[in-house]
Image (cartoon, rainbow, N blue to C red):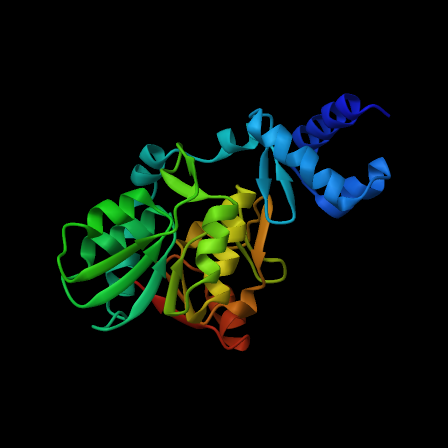
Length: 253
């Protein structure tokens, strides 16, 4: 198979499946993983796909990510209440990571100006915190996703590997007791997984509509979460099942 033909088929596969691993492509085309990585690097430069940790994702899939404007008005009251509750667990001197969710932005808005280090991949969170003199803000950098005004990709992933934080505050699109946490966008999901990995404690901030649902990309098992902050509409059965898994549930007022 000619190189050009292989690369064209790689793009077709990525767009069809939305994401493909390097190891899988290596087996499909009977070439080395290094050859596939070179193919992906070339195709990314041509804006035909986007590389991720261990593979590639479709650029077309980014369109499925909800815009930050739409997210700001969806369940806004619940998200703000959840953020207010989350801020209660942040103390002066903490080192925390905030994802690019709307709820994380609300957390940034609610935070008092105090000695704090915040690591984030969100432009909106970084701008909000820039108004507070005592808060040190570290941006991951990376490839910009215009829909969510956030950074993703290999540079953002490598950036997170450099740090350790006390607490991670994340949100997601789906919370399933058996299948775990999930998100629409694989690149966001990869970053959120890393945020969990570098934190001593992970606080999940989700409204009750997220429970029992699954999105495209897996983030982590539910057991990786230490505490969930949600609204009062969560079912009692779900609360009981979470407590059985030693996950604290806090209801935002």
